[in-house]
Image 1 (spheres, rainbow, N blue to C red):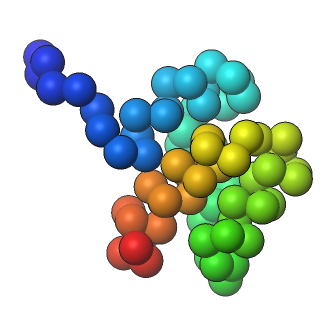
Image 2 (cartoon, helix red, strand yellow):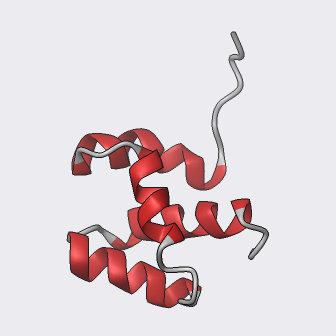
Length: 71
């Protein structure tokens, strides 16, 4: 088992799952449905539609966009 600490946006994942009660895979599915939105628009959507804090929303969007090659 790796003892390396998770860094970057993924470091927020445990607290996001705990606070909002959904696995990260569900949040990434939500973001996949917003593919025509820009980064800031996705963050705003999560904040307004799901009452998510800015840091958590930004971490999810950054991770999602990086995994999709959208940087």
